[in-house]
Image (tube, rainbow over all chains, first blue to last red; front, side, top):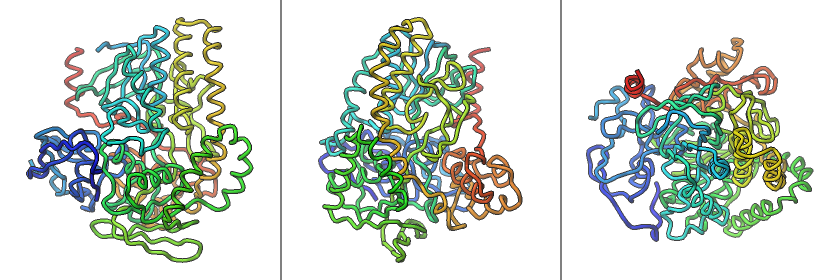
Length: 100
Length: 462
Protein backbone atom coordinates (compact mmCIF):
# COMPACT_ATOMS: atom_id res chain seq x y z
CA UNK A 1 0.00 0.00 0.00
CA UNK A 2 2.99 2.30 0.67
CA UNK A 3 6.46 2.56 -0.81
CA UNK A 4 9.65 4.16 0.44
CA UNK A 5 10.71 7.32 -1.36
CA UNK A 6 13.69 6.24 -3.45
CA UNK A 7 16.11 8.95 -2.40
CA UNK A 8 15.63 8.40 1.35
CA UNK A 9 18.10 6.58 3.63
CA UNK A 10 18.84 3.14 2.12
CA UNK A 11 19.63 1.15 5.27
CA UNK A 12 17.49 -1.99 5.73
CA UNK A 13 17.26 -4.27 8.76
CA UNK A 14 15.84 -7.75 9.21
CA UNK A 15 12.86 -8.34 11.47
CA UNK A 16 10.40 -11.22 11.75
CA UNK A 17 6.68 -10.92 11.02
CA UNK A 18 4.54 -14.01 11.66
CA UNK A 19 7.74 -16.05 11.83
CA UNK A 20 8.98 -14.92 8.40
CA UNK A 21 12.20 -12.89 8.10
CA UNK A 22 11.65 -9.63 6.20
CA UNK A 23 13.73 -6.56 5.36
CA UNK A 24 12.40 -3.13 6.33
CA UNK A 25 13.87 0.40 6.42
CA UNK A 26 15.74 1.14 9.65
CA UNK A 27 14.34 3.73 12.05
CA UNK A 28 10.65 3.41 11.20
CA UNK A 29 7.78 2.27 13.40
CA UNK A 30 6.52 -1.29 13.33
CA UNK A 31 3.14 -0.05 12.05
CA UNK A 32 4.90 1.77 9.19
CA UNK A 33 6.83 -1.44 8.45
CA UNK A 34 3.53 -3.33 8.02
CA UNK A 35 2.34 -0.77 5.45
CA UNK A 36 5.71 -1.02 3.71
CA UNK A 37 5.38 -4.82 3.58
CA UNK A 38 1.69 -4.66 2.60
CA UNK A 39 1.00 -7.01 5.52
CA UNK A 40 -2.75 -6.38 5.57
CA UNK A 41 -4.84 -6.76 7.62
CA UNK A 42 -2.60 -6.19 10.62
CA UNK A 43 -5.18 -7.78 12.95
CA UNK A 44 -8.72 -9.12 13.19
CA UNK A 45 -11.20 -7.93 15.81
CA UNK A 46 -12.17 -10.30 18.58
CA UNK A 47 -15.86 -9.50 18.23
CA UNK A 48 -16.44 -10.09 14.52
CA UNK A 49 -13.04 -11.11 13.10
CA UNK A 50 -13.23 -8.07 10.82
CA UNK A 51 -9.96 -6.97 9.23
CA UNK A 52 -8.17 -3.86 10.55
CA UNK A 53 -4.99 -1.87 10.01
CA UNK A 54 -3.31 1.12 11.63
CA UNK A 55 -5.58 4.16 11.42
CA UNK A 56 -4.18 7.19 13.30
CA UNK A 57 -0.44 6.33 13.59
CA UNK A 58 -0.17 8.49 16.74
CA UNK A 59 -1.10 6.15 19.55
CA UNK A 60 -4.73 7.21 19.97
CA UNK A 61 -6.87 4.69 18.05
CA UNK A 62 -5.37 1.33 19.12
CA UNK A 63 -6.13 -0.23 15.72
CA UNK A 64 -2.48 -1.26 15.13
CA UNK A 65 -2.33 -3.76 18.01
CA UNK A 66 0.22 -6.50 17.44
CA UNK A 67 1.88 -9.25 19.44
CA UNK A 68 5.49 -8.18 19.95
CA UNK A 69 8.11 -10.45 21.53
CA UNK A 70 5.39 -12.49 23.23
CA UNK A 71 3.47 -9.47 24.61
CA UNK A 72 -0.03 -9.20 23.16
CA UNK A 73 -1.83 -6.07 21.95
CA UNK A 74 1.10 -3.65 21.67
CA UNK A 75 0.62 -0.43 19.70
CA UNK A 76 2.79 -1.00 16.63
CA UNK A 77 2.81 2.72 15.81
CA UNK A 78 4.62 3.46 19.09
CA UNK A 79 7.39 0.87 18.60
CA UNK A 80 10.49 1.33 16.47
CA UNK A 81 11.78 -1.63 14.46
CA UNK A 82 15.16 -3.01 15.56
CA UNK A 83 17.20 -5.87 14.12
CA UNK A 84 15.76 -9.25 15.06
CA UNK A 85 12.44 -7.86 16.40
CA UNK A 86 9.74 -10.55 16.30
CA UNK A 87 6.10 -9.60 15.87
CA UNK A 88 2.94 -11.53 15.11
CA UNK A 89 -0.25 -10.23 13.63
CA UNK A 90 -3.24 -11.05 15.84
CA UNK A 91 -5.24 -12.71 13.10
CA UNK A 92 -6.96 -15.40 15.14
CA UNK A 93 -9.60 -13.53 17.08
CA UNK A 94 -10.48 -16.48 19.31
CA UNK A 95 -6.97 -17.06 20.57
CA UNK A 96 -5.04 -13.80 20.65
CA UNK A 97 -2.06 -15.49 22.30
CA UNK A 98 -2.08 -18.59 20.09
CA UNK A 99 0.81 -17.44 17.90
CA UNK A 100 3.62 -17.67 20.41
CA UNK B 1 14.54 9.67 38.47
CA UNK B 2 13.12 11.64 41.35
CA UNK B 3 9.68 11.19 42.86
CA UNK B 4 8.83 14.87 42.77
CA UNK B 5 9.54 17.84 40.49
CA UNK B 6 8.59 21.52 40.80
CA UNK B 7 7.31 21.38 37.20
CA UNK B 8 6.28 18.42 35.06
CA UNK B 9 5.44 19.07 31.42
CA UNK B 10 3.50 16.41 29.54
CA UNK B 11 4.20 16.51 25.83
CA UNK B 12 7.25 17.67 23.85
CA UNK B 13 5.55 19.35 20.91
CA UNK B 14 5.85 23.10 20.31
CA UNK B 15 3.96 24.06 23.50
CA UNK B 16 5.75 21.63 25.81
CA UNK B 17 9.22 22.39 24.42
CA UNK B 18 8.65 26.14 24.76
CA UNK B 19 7.27 25.89 28.31
CA UNK B 20 10.28 23.80 29.32
CA UNK B 21 12.82 26.22 27.88
CA UNK B 22 11.25 29.31 29.47
CA UNK B 23 10.79 27.73 32.90
CA UNK B 24 14.27 26.17 32.90
CA UNK B 25 15.82 29.50 31.87
CA UNK B 26 14.32 31.05 35.02
CA UNK B 27 15.76 28.32 37.20
CA UNK B 28 12.73 26.06 37.59
CA UNK B 29 13.57 22.37 37.82
CA UNK B 30 11.67 20.72 34.98
CA UNK B 31 10.80 17.18 33.91
CA UNK B 32 9.33 16.60 30.45
CA UNK B 33 7.42 13.43 29.65
CA UNK B 34 6.67 12.58 26.04
CA UNK B 35 5.15 9.61 24.27
CA UNK B 36 7.36 9.99 21.20
CA UNK B 37 10.96 8.81 21.02
CA UNK B 38 12.02 12.22 19.59
CA UNK B 39 10.93 15.74 20.61
CA UNK B 40 8.81 17.86 18.25
CA UNK B 41 5.31 16.47 18.67
CA UNK B 42 3.30 15.35 15.65
CA UNK B 43 3.82 18.65 13.83
CA UNK B 44 7.64 18.63 13.93
CA UNK B 45 8.00 14.87 13.95
CA UNK B 46 11.54 13.75 12.98
CA UNK B 47 12.39 17.34 12.01
CA UNK B 48 16.05 16.95 13.02
CA UNK B 49 16.27 13.25 12.15
CA UNK B 50 14.31 13.11 8.90
CA UNK B 51 14.54 9.97 6.77
CA UNK B 52 13.79 12.16 3.74
CA UNK B 53 16.70 13.14 1.50
CA UNK B 54 15.17 16.60 1.33
CA UNK B 55 12.80 17.49 4.16
CA UNK B 56 12.02 20.74 2.31
CA UNK B 57 9.35 18.86 0.41
CA UNK B 58 7.24 19.00 3.60
CA UNK B 59 7.26 22.81 3.44
CA UNK B 60 8.85 25.75 5.21
CA UNK B 61 6.56 25.65 8.27
CA UNK B 62 7.78 22.16 9.10
CA UNK B 63 11.43 23.26 9.04
CA UNK B 64 10.63 26.08 11.51
CA UNK B 65 10.53 23.33 14.12
CA UNK B 66 14.17 22.37 13.67
CA UNK B 67 15.77 25.16 15.75
CA UNK B 68 13.06 24.67 18.40
CA UNK B 69 13.83 20.96 18.69
CA UNK B 70 17.58 21.57 18.76
CA UNK B 71 17.23 24.25 21.46
CA UNK B 72 15.05 21.87 23.47
CA UNK B 73 17.67 19.15 23.23
CA UNK B 74 20.17 21.55 24.85
CA UNK B 75 17.81 22.68 27.63
CA UNK B 76 18.84 21.45 31.11
CA UNK B 77 15.78 19.37 32.02
CA UNK B 78 15.00 15.77 32.81
CA UNK B 79 13.52 14.33 29.64
CA UNK B 80 11.54 11.10 29.51
CA UNK B 81 10.91 10.20 25.88
CA UNK B 82 8.91 7.13 24.76
CA UNK B 83 7.00 7.36 28.06
CA UNK B 84 3.31 7.55 28.82
CA UNK B 85 1.23 9.18 31.53
CA UNK B 86 -1.44 6.64 32.44
CA UNK B 87 -2.69 8.39 35.62
CA UNK B 88 -3.18 11.99 36.62
CA UNK B 89 -5.27 13.55 39.38
CA UNK B 90 -6.18 16.97 40.75
CA UNK B 91 -3.47 16.72 43.41
CA UNK B 92 -0.92 16.70 40.57
CA UNK B 93 0.07 13.12 41.13
CA UNK B 94 1.27 11.42 37.96
CA UNK B 95 1.45 7.74 37.06
CA UNK B 96 4.28 7.39 34.54
CA UNK B 97 5.26 4.43 32.38
CA UNK B 98 8.93 4.80 31.56
CA UNK B 99 10.95 1.95 30.04
CA UNK B 100 8.03 -0.38 30.77
CA UNK B 101 8.12 0.47 34.48
CA UNK B 102 5.52 2.34 36.50
CA UNK B 103 6.71 5.35 38.52
CA UNK B 104 4.73 7.71 40.72
CA UNK B 105 5.69 11.37 40.45
CA UNK B 106 4.40 14.39 42.34
CA UNK B 107 4.47 17.70 40.53
CA UNK B 108 4.47 21.23 42.00
CA UNK B 109 2.95 22.45 38.76
CA UNK B 110 1.93 20.64 35.62
CA UNK B 111 1.78 21.89 32.04
CA UNK B 112 -0.41 19.63 29.93
CA UNK B 113 0.84 20.07 26.36
CA UNK B 114 -0.41 16.90 24.72
CA UNK B 115 -1.74 18.61 21.60
CA UNK B 116 -4.60 17.51 19.41
CA UNK B 117 -6.05 14.46 17.75
CA UNK B 118 -7.93 14.28 14.51
CA UNK B 119 -11.66 14.77 14.77
CA UNK B 120 -13.21 11.38 14.04
CA UNK B 121 -14.81 11.21 10.58
CA UNK B 122 -17.15 8.24 10.81
CA UNK B 123 -18.41 6.94 7.46
CA UNK B 124 -19.56 3.43 6.55
CA UNK B 125 -16.44 1.29 6.02
CA UNK B 126 -13.98 3.64 7.77
CA UNK B 127 -12.71 0.63 9.72
CA UNK B 128 -11.43 -1.15 6.58
CA UNK B 129 -7.69 -1.57 5.95
CA UNK B 130 -6.90 1.02 3.30
CA UNK B 131 -8.73 3.78 5.19
CA UNK B 132 -6.69 5.95 7.53
CA UNK B 133 -6.56 9.54 8.73
CA UNK B 134 -4.75 12.19 6.68
CA UNK B 135 -2.59 12.72 9.75
CA UNK B 136 -1.55 9.06 9.60
CA UNK B 137 -0.50 9.57 5.98
CA UNK B 138 1.55 12.56 7.00
CA UNK B 139 3.20 10.70 9.89
CA UNK B 140 4.20 7.90 7.47
CA UNK B 141 5.78 10.54 5.24
CA UNK B 142 7.56 12.48 8.01
CA UNK B 143 8.77 9.57 10.09
CA UNK B 144 9.27 6.78 7.55
CA UNK B 145 9.54 8.44 4.10
CA UNK B 146 6.60 6.27 3.03
CA UNK B 147 4.23 7.44 0.31
CA UNK B 148 1.22 5.70 -1.24
CA UNK B 149 2.09 3.16 -3.95
CA UNK B 150 -0.99 4.27 -5.87
CA UNK B 151 -2.46 7.80 -5.83
CA UNK B 152 -4.81 8.01 -2.80
CA UNK B 153 -8.20 9.66 -2.43
CA UNK B 154 -8.28 12.42 0.21
CA UNK B 155 -11.70 13.08 1.69
CA UNK B 156 -13.08 15.56 4.18
CA UNK B 157 -12.31 19.17 4.96
CA UNK B 158 -9.63 21.36 6.42
CA UNK B 159 -6.10 22.71 5.94
CA UNK B 160 -4.32 19.45 6.79
CA UNK B 161 -6.05 17.63 3.92
CA UNK B 162 -4.82 20.27 1.47
CA UNK B 163 -1.35 20.29 3.00
CA UNK B 164 -1.04 16.52 2.62
CA UNK B 165 -2.17 16.70 -1.03
CA UNK B 166 0.45 19.41 -1.63
CA UNK B 167 3.19 17.38 0.10
CA UNK B 168 2.31 14.26 -1.94
CA UNK B 169 2.51 16.32 -5.13
CA UNK B 170 5.94 17.62 -4.14
CA UNK B 171 7.04 14.06 -3.36
CA UNK B 172 6.06 13.06 -6.89
CA UNK B 173 3.03 11.05 -5.80
CA UNK B 174 -0.24 11.74 -7.53
CA UNK B 175 -3.55 12.30 -5.77
CA UNK B 176 -6.49 10.43 -7.32
CA UNK B 177 -9.13 12.88 -6.10
CA UNK B 178 -10.04 15.31 -3.35
CA UNK B 179 -13.53 14.69 -2.02
CA UNK B 180 -14.32 17.92 -0.23
CA UNK B 181 -17.10 17.89 2.37
CA UNK B 182 -16.76 21.57 3.34
CA UNK B 183 -20.32 22.98 3.53
CA UNK B 184 -20.92 25.72 0.96
CA UNK B 185 -22.84 27.88 3.42
CA UNK B 186 -19.71 28.28 5.56
CA UNK B 187 -18.27 30.73 3.06
CA UNK B 188 -20.33 33.75 4.02
CA UNK B 189 -19.59 33.33 7.73
CA UNK B 190 -15.90 32.99 6.88
CA UNK B 191 -15.84 36.06 4.65
CA UNK B 192 -17.25 38.16 7.49
CA UNK B 193 -14.18 37.18 9.49
CA UNK B 194 -11.70 37.77 6.69
CA UNK B 195 -10.75 41.36 7.68
CA UNK B 196 -9.53 40.20 11.08
CA UNK B 197 -7.66 37.32 9.46
CA UNK B 198 -5.60 39.79 7.42
CA UNK B 199 -3.58 40.42 10.57
CA UNK B 200 -2.19 36.91 10.03
CA UNK B 201 -2.04 37.12 6.25
CA UNK B 202 0.76 34.55 5.93
CA UNK B 203 -1.75 31.81 6.76
CA UNK B 204 -4.07 33.01 3.97
CA UNK B 205 -1.12 33.18 1.59
CA UNK B 206 -0.11 29.62 2.49
CA UNK B 207 -3.66 28.36 1.95
CA UNK B 208 -3.88 30.02 -1.46
CA UNK B 209 -0.50 28.54 -2.39
CA UNK B 210 -1.71 25.02 -1.53
CA UNK B 211 -5.01 25.44 -3.37
CA UNK B 212 -3.43 26.82 -6.52
CA UNK B 213 -0.80 24.04 -6.63
CA UNK B 214 -3.54 21.41 -6.31
CA UNK B 215 -5.56 23.09 -9.06
CA UNK B 216 -2.52 23.36 -11.33
CA UNK B 217 -1.98 19.61 -10.91
CA UNK B 218 -5.53 19.11 -12.22
CA UNK B 219 -6.52 16.79 -9.40
CA UNK B 220 -10.25 16.04 -9.58
CA UNK B 221 -11.77 18.08 -6.75
CA UNK B 222 -15.34 17.13 -5.84
CA UNK B 223 -17.15 19.82 -3.86
CA UNK B 224 -19.97 19.64 -1.28
CA UNK B 225 -19.55 15.88 -1.01
CA UNK B 226 -22.00 14.03 1.22
CA UNK B 227 -22.98 10.48 2.13
CA UNK B 228 -19.46 9.12 1.81
CA UNK B 229 -19.21 5.34 1.93
CA UNK B 230 -15.99 3.28 1.91
CA UNK B 231 -16.63 -0.03 0.28
CA UNK B 232 -14.65 -3.27 0.25
CA UNK B 233 -14.50 -6.74 1.71
CA UNK B 234 -11.08 -7.46 3.19
CA UNK B 235 -9.65 -4.09 2.12
CA UNK B 236 -10.94 -0.82 0.74
CA UNK B 237 -11.91 -1.10 -2.93
CA UNK B 238 -13.88 2.03 -3.68
CA UNK B 239 -15.35 5.23 -2.29
CA UNK B 240 -18.92 6.21 -3.11
CA UNK B 241 -20.43 9.64 -2.41
CA UNK B 242 -22.78 12.31 -3.68
CA UNK B 243 -21.40 15.59 -4.98
CA UNK B 244 -23.67 18.44 -6.05
CA UNK B 245 -26.53 16.04 -6.64
CA UNK B 246 -24.64 13.44 -8.66
CA UNK B 247 -23.56 10.01 -7.42
CA UNK B 248 -19.83 9.35 -7.82
CA UNK B 249 -17.84 6.14 -7.43
CA UNK B 250 -14.02 6.02 -7.37
CA UNK B 251 -11.99 2.82 -7.34
CA UNK B 252 -9.15 3.20 -4.84
CA UNK B 253 -7.14 1.13 -2.39
CA UNK B 254 -6.27 4.06 -0.12
CA UNK B 255 -8.55 6.66 1.40
CA UNK B 256 -7.27 9.33 3.78
CA UNK B 257 -9.92 11.03 5.91
CA UNK B 258 -9.74 14.36 7.66
CA UNK B 259 -12.18 16.81 9.19
CA UNK B 260 -10.08 19.00 11.39
CA UNK B 261 -8.43 18.44 14.72
CA UNK B 262 -9.77 18.65 18.28
CA UNK B 263 -7.96 19.00 21.61
CA UNK B 264 -6.73 15.77 23.19
CA UNK B 265 -8.58 16.04 26.50
CA UNK B 266 -7.85 12.82 28.38
CA UNK B 267 -5.20 14.32 30.68
CA UNK B 268 -7.16 17.49 31.48
CA UNK B 269 -10.24 15.34 32.04
CA UNK B 270 -8.38 12.96 34.33
CA UNK B 271 -7.17 15.91 36.40
CA UNK B 272 -10.79 17.11 36.60
CA UNK B 273 -10.32 20.40 34.74
CA UNK B 274 -13.52 22.25 33.94
CA UNK B 275 -14.55 22.10 30.27
CA UNK B 276 -16.73 24.21 28.02
CA UNK B 277 -18.23 23.57 24.59
CA UNK B 278 -16.84 25.78 21.83
CA UNK B 279 -19.56 26.49 19.28
CA UNK B 280 -16.93 28.00 16.97
CA UNK B 281 -14.52 25.05 17.00
CA UNK B 282 -17.27 22.46 17.56
CA UNK B 283 -15.35 20.75 20.33
CA UNK B 284 -14.89 20.73 24.08
CA UNK B 285 -12.10 22.84 25.50
CA UNK B 286 -10.71 23.19 29.01
CA UNK B 287 -11.33 26.55 30.66
CA UNK B 288 -7.99 28.34 31.01
CA UNK B 289 -6.90 31.86 31.96
CA UNK B 290 -4.52 34.10 30.00
CA UNK B 291 -1.54 32.08 31.30
CA UNK B 292 -3.09 28.74 30.45
CA UNK B 293 -3.97 27.84 34.04
CA UNK B 294 -7.02 25.57 34.25
CA UNK B 295 -9.77 25.52 36.86
CA UNK B 296 -7.35 23.52 39.02
CA UNK B 297 -4.60 25.68 40.53
CA UNK B 298 -1.17 24.62 39.34
CA UNK B 299 -2.48 22.64 36.35
CA UNK B 300 -1.77 24.52 33.12
CA UNK B 301 -2.84 23.54 29.63
CA UNK B 302 -0.93 25.01 26.70
CA UNK B 303 -1.17 24.66 22.94
CA UNK B 304 -3.77 22.76 20.96
CA UNK B 305 -4.76 20.75 24.05
CA UNK B 306 -6.46 23.97 25.27
CA UNK B 307 -8.12 24.83 21.94
CA UNK B 308 -6.88 24.59 18.36
CA UNK B 309 -4.51 27.42 17.46
CA UNK B 310 -1.71 25.78 15.49
CA UNK B 311 1.99 25.28 16.16
CA UNK B 312 3.10 28.92 16.34
CA UNK B 313 0.36 29.85 18.81
CA UNK B 314 1.12 26.69 20.79
CA UNK B 315 4.78 27.67 21.28
CA UNK B 316 3.74 31.14 22.50
CA UNK B 317 1.15 29.70 24.89
CA UNK B 318 3.80 27.32 26.20
CA UNK B 319 6.15 30.24 26.88
CA UNK B 320 3.42 32.12 28.76
CA UNK B 321 2.66 29.08 30.91
CA UNK B 322 6.38 28.68 31.62
CA UNK B 323 6.62 32.31 32.76
CA UNK B 324 3.64 31.99 35.06
CA UNK B 325 5.05 28.86 36.66
CA UNK B 326 8.37 30.68 37.21
CA UNK B 327 6.47 33.59 38.78
CA UNK B 328 4.46 31.31 41.08
CA UNK B 329 7.63 29.59 42.20
CA UNK B 330 9.22 32.98 42.99
CA UNK B 331 11.84 32.72 40.26
CA UNK B 332 10.76 36.01 38.70
CA UNK B 333 8.79 38.98 39.98
CA UNK B 334 5.47 40.17 38.66
CA UNK B 335 7.01 43.07 36.76
CA UNK B 336 9.58 40.90 35.05
CA UNK B 337 6.91 38.34 34.18
CA UNK B 338 4.72 41.01 32.62
CA UNK B 339 7.61 42.54 30.72
CA UNK B 340 8.64 39.16 29.28
CA UNK B 341 5.05 38.21 28.55
CA UNK B 342 4.01 41.33 26.63
CA UNK B 343 5.64 40.57 23.25
CA UNK B 344 4.46 36.96 23.53
CA UNK B 345 0.88 38.05 24.14
CA UNK B 346 0.98 40.41 21.16
CA UNK B 347 2.36 37.67 18.89
CA UNK B 348 -0.16 35.15 20.21
CA UNK B 349 -3.06 37.49 19.47
CA UNK B 350 -1.76 37.91 15.93
CA UNK B 351 -1.38 34.18 15.26
CA UNK B 352 -4.86 33.51 16.65
CA UNK B 353 -6.37 36.18 14.38
CA UNK B 354 -6.64 33.59 11.59
CA UNK B 355 -8.72 31.17 13.68
CA UNK B 356 -12.23 32.69 13.42
CA UNK B 357 -11.84 32.65 9.62
CA UNK B 358 -10.49 29.09 9.45
CA UNK B 359 -12.89 27.78 12.09
CA UNK B 360 -15.93 29.15 10.29
CA UNK B 361 -14.73 28.20 6.80
CA UNK B 362 -14.09 24.58 7.82
CA UNK B 363 -16.84 24.28 10.44
CA UNK B 364 -18.24 20.76 10.25
CA UNK B 365 -21.91 20.26 9.48
CA UNK B 366 -23.20 18.01 12.25
CA UNK B 367 -26.39 17.30 10.29
CA UNK B 368 -24.31 15.72 7.52
CA UNK B 369 -22.49 13.41 9.95
CA UNK B 370 -23.55 9.82 10.54
CA UNK B 371 -26.36 9.84 7.99
CA UNK B 372 -26.09 6.04 7.58
CA UNK B 373 -27.13 3.96 10.59
CA UNK B 374 -24.73 1.14 9.68
CA UNK B 375 -21.71 3.41 10.30
CA UNK B 376 -19.53 2.12 13.11
CA UNK B 377 -19.51 4.82 15.78
CA UNK B 378 -17.29 2.82 18.14
CA UNK B 379 -14.60 1.05 16.13
CA UNK B 380 -13.29 -0.85 19.17
CA UNK B 381 -16.55 -2.36 20.42
CA UNK B 382 -18.13 -2.32 16.95
CA UNK B 383 -21.21 -0.30 17.88
CA UNK B 384 -23.18 1.25 15.02
CA UNK B 385 -24.92 4.61 14.80
CA UNK B 386 -28.26 2.74 14.71
CA UNK B 387 -27.47 1.15 18.08
CA UNK B 388 -26.78 4.57 19.62
CA UNK B 389 -29.98 5.88 18.01
CA UNK B 390 -31.87 2.98 19.58
CA UNK B 391 -30.71 3.75 23.11
CA UNK B 392 -31.37 7.45 22.49
CA UNK B 393 -34.95 6.52 21.55
CA UNK B 394 -35.25 4.63 24.84
CA UNK B 395 -34.54 7.91 26.64
CA UNK B 396 -30.84 7.46 27.29
CA UNK B 397 -29.78 10.38 29.50
CA UNK B 398 -26.30 11.05 28.08
CA UNK B 399 -23.02 9.66 26.76
CA UNK B 400 -22.18 7.79 29.95
CA UNK B 401 -25.50 5.96 29.99
CA UNK B 402 -25.08 5.19 26.28
CA UNK B 403 -21.71 3.72 27.22
CA UNK B 404 -23.22 1.58 29.94
CA UNK B 405 -26.03 0.37 27.65
CA UNK B 406 -23.93 -0.45 24.59
CA UNK B 407 -20.24 -0.63 25.62
CA UNK B 408 -19.62 2.24 23.19
CA UNK B 409 -16.43 3.94 24.42
CA UNK B 410 -15.32 1.04 26.61
CA UNK B 411 -12.78 -0.35 24.14
CA UNK B 412 -9.07 0.15 23.80
CA UNK B 413 -9.20 3.74 22.54
CA UNK B 414 -11.39 4.71 25.53
CA UNK B 415 -13.75 6.88 23.57
CA UNK B 416 -11.15 8.94 21.72
CA UNK B 417 -12.70 8.02 18.36
CA UNK B 418 -16.38 7.70 19.30
CA UNK B 419 -17.04 10.35 21.96
CA UNK B 420 -17.70 13.15 19.47
CA UNK B 421 -20.04 10.92 17.42
CA UNK B 422 -22.08 9.83 20.42
CA UNK B 423 -22.51 13.48 21.43
CA UNK B 424 -23.71 14.42 17.93
CA UNK B 425 -26.21 11.54 17.78
CA UNK B 426 -27.67 12.23 21.22
CA UNK B 427 -27.89 15.98 20.52
CA UNK B 428 -29.67 15.26 17.22
CA UNK B 429 -32.15 13.01 18.95
CA UNK B 430 -32.96 15.61 21.58
CA UNK B 431 -32.75 18.54 19.15
CA UNK B 432 -30.35 20.37 21.44
CA UNK B 433 -26.74 21.56 21.40
CA UNK B 434 -23.87 19.20 22.18
CA UNK B 435 -23.18 21.63 25.05
CA UNK B 436 -26.30 20.24 26.76
CA UNK B 437 -25.39 16.61 26.14
CA UNK B 438 -22.15 16.42 28.10
CA UNK B 439 -19.38 13.93 27.55
CA UNK B 440 -17.84 10.62 28.51
CA UNK B 441 -16.21 10.45 31.92
CA UNK B 442 -12.48 9.75 31.52
CA UNK B 443 -10.91 7.36 33.98
CA UNK B 444 -7.38 5.98 34.30
CA UNK B 445 -5.60 4.01 33.01
CA UNK B 446 -5.32 6.61 30.25
CA UNK B 447 -2.80 4.36 28.49
CA UNK B 448 -2.43 0.59 28.90
CA UNK B 449 -0.58 -0.49 32.03
CA UNK B 450 -0.25 -4.08 33.18
CA UNK B 451 -1.04 -5.37 36.66
CA UNK B 452 2.54 -6.67 36.71
CA UNK B 453 3.90 -3.16 36.19
CA UNK B 454 1.71 -1.80 39.01
CA UNK B 455 2.59 -4.68 41.33
CA UNK B 456 6.33 -4.30 40.68
CA UNK B 457 6.16 -0.60 41.54
CA UNK B 458 4.18 -1.09 44.73
CA UNK B 459 6.77 -3.68 45.78
CA UNK B 460 9.49 -1.03 45.45
CA UNK B 461 7.64 1.48 47.54
CA UNK B 462 6.52 -0.73 50.41
